[in-house]
Length: 129
Image (cartoon, rainbow, N blue to C red; front, side, top):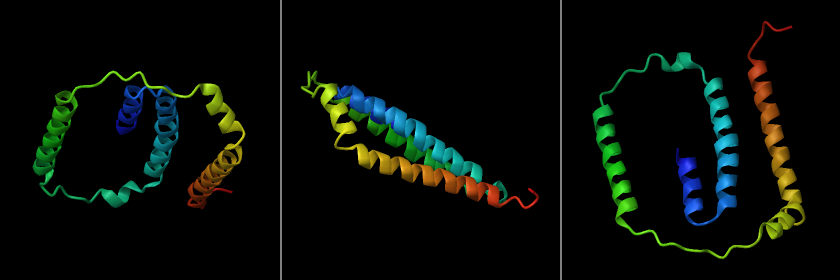
């Protein structure tokens, strides 16, 4: 939800490209990493946790924070800003010329992380041939 909210802030700032990147990268890739982390967690370690009775305090704090956020959102006027951005062709040219090597390095790091995850998941099963 926070990732969608951040994309909404980019839309309010008239930066549609950054909103789309926010949704695609963080909404897609990071959520999948979180799902992998949850799948790799052993649930048996958490079955014996008891409720400590702090849910009421947590609910009160959560509702009060929601009220403060809503008051801040609806209490301040939103100005219509036409925003003067750069054309997309300049951004595309920069991404595929000046920033091509950093993107390739980032993709290689993500590939290594994915291979490492597969090795970790497959390494626990001893009954596989």
